[in-house]
Amino acid sequence: MTRRQIEQEFAAKATRKYLRDWITSAEDFYRVAHRDLAKTNLYGATCFYARQCADFYLKAFLIQHDVELKITWNLPTLNRLCAKIEPSFKDIAIFAKRLAPFDEKVLYPGFSATQADAKDCVTAMREIRKCVRARLGLK
Image 1 (tube, rainbow, N blue to C red):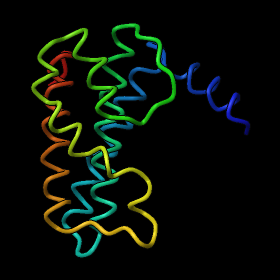
Image 2 (image 1 turned 120 degrees about the vertical axis):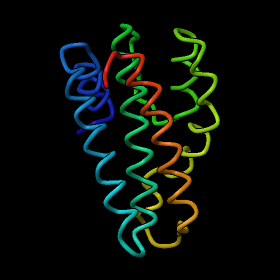
Image 3 (image 1 turned 180 degrees about the horizontal axis):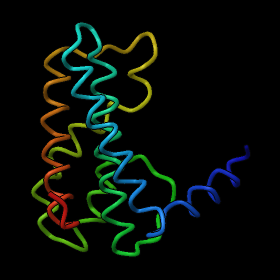
Image 4 (image 1 turned 135 degrees about the vertical axis):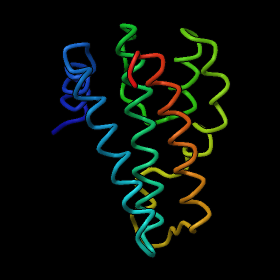
């Protein structure tokens, strides 16, 4: 797939029609992060999936508000976009920043995450999830 095809596919899926799918995927990542935290030495995976959960929830909020998304995995940028709509997102900016470094590189050799990192990432994920779900009217 070319970059252009990937961008077109993303744009097609970043619509209200797929909002429930974004939330379902975010919840899947939430459960995986919790599962991985409970297992020894899966700290990198915990951080990665916690980050993915936050990414999908922030994108779901933006999609709900009809913001046209471009492909980005920059959590602080996504959070700033959310804060333009709902200023209370500024309160969770610290959590978006905390999760930002834990992209796919944590899954490769040479990058390691500690148990403390994993716990911090799960805490950050929970805070972002709680904020977004409340603003989407979800329990």
